[in-house]
Image (cartoon, rainbow over all chains, first blue to last red; front, top):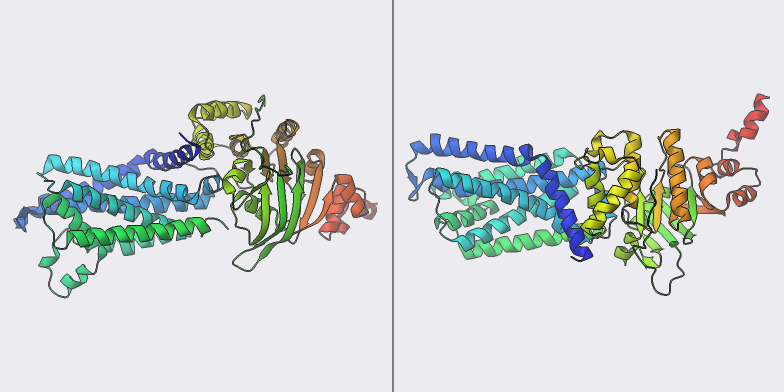
Length: 255
Length: 272
């Protein structure tokens, strides 16, 4: 391994070690939360709804829950990790090392990406035991989940870097992220909504992410797959470029 | 502390350099708030020197250190560590520097062993080397029994020792100690003195900031006074006293900060 590879893997190991040390909170709790959703919306409420666009209600909901698990955990991991380290000034150890801004950004991003991916995978594995969950378009599914995971990882980094107190992270998650995800159609199809709510839902970027993941699993979508994938890739690229600039200039990291 | 450090240069000097450990020229640092913390600092620390930087709170000591280590971005001027530009060629420059900061900035999630292991990794050390070096340093700083404990469980003195061990982990040629003995007991202070004197004798250049003048006098071969973001005097302890036409380094310092009425000589006169 080169020195740069050792640096990068050390930075990434530190990020993974952080969330694995508090796995009851960072892995256990989100898994339980997802299963509560499956229980409430699948078993309890789902028994009252026969099918949605030809799919059992619980099967229709699970793809969105998997995406939601990846998104929220990727975001909250990175935002919290960076803010915590900024508070303790422990981040100075990384910042004063020879690590480049790109190495630092990738390591911070991948920490949350991997945590989200782990929870999404565990959710998928367990859901597969409970319901018959098809995977119609694996390539689209993997691409979409990776892009969604990376998008929210980047968003977590952005909020973590900008945040000055834990309230800033909590605000972004509770008042922006969760409403966008919940109103993006995790638990329903936008076609069931009356106007203007259906149109408003189409203005929510998360709606297209959920559609992509749902298409990957079920083969059902309400939006253009190619266009959604392209726009998502563009958004990921733009967010990454913004974050890289913040790391290069040292915005709220270096004085 | 029974540690015998092995000094292997992490970064060779840049070709054609005069091998100064630190060469600062016209360094200015202005914060976004408009505060000008450094106002054209010129400073040279020769390879192997034990250099003291003294000044009152807010004089610019920590800002100077932060600019050198990449924790602050200079507004203008240049900084070279062993000839490597600390901004343009930060990788080489930072690899040569070990920083023991004033704050106890340890990661509370990590154990002592992990703290050293990750730090070594950030500086590109291989696994085997990291493991051996961490074991050496934990032993040297009497922290071996605590190696699997999380850092938040340590006492203040142990945290201070771990921070010094972390700074030394990648075998830096240039060690920066920012008030390393602030708030530590006499025993640990003396242990640290002996330790840093030894590694200096073995070739490591040291920059020390401290508010304890006797510490600077005891350890440093050369001292600079910094005030209002400028180096206002530099020399040996005796030279500084002569510059201010006083007897001791302490009196020279009091002249610098404009508090000569606090001089022990004056206090003795008043009480007698």
